Amino acid sequence: MLRQAKAAFEKGGYEVQTIRITTQPFTQYVGSRSAAEALDFFKSLDELSKKDSFMLNIGPLTPEDSSDAAKVELLSHILAQTRVNASLDVANEDGVSWSAIRSAAQVVKYVEEHSPNGSQQF
Image (cartoon, rainbow, N blue to C red; front, side, top):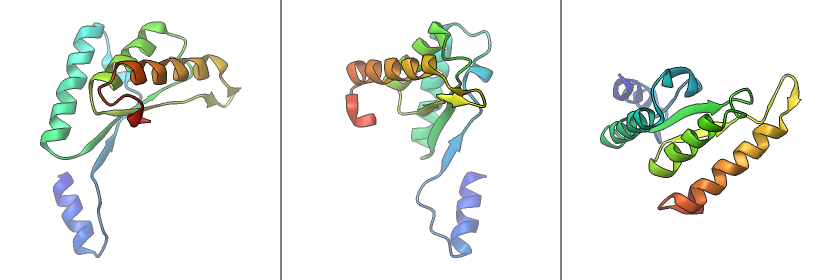
């Protein structure tokens, strides 16, 4: 379906550089999986994105979830061990979340130290 959409846009005169998929916040579909199961799930999605040549963004870590150390750690491991992308929302309607900013810094530092690509990802 994505390839068909790409072809239709190109036929209409639009240049399509990449196919990208962005999901709802990843914590919404991780469900009750253990951290190891969730990591395996994202590794399989990463393999699918490589095979089918699309870029995957697993959605944001929200300010509400950024205070959950297990979710922050899971995101850190996912980003360090795959090519998927994510984001971290650091503000909402209530304003800036300093806890979310600290969590974002923690994720960036972990990925820098544990990813084969290190700081090249940011």
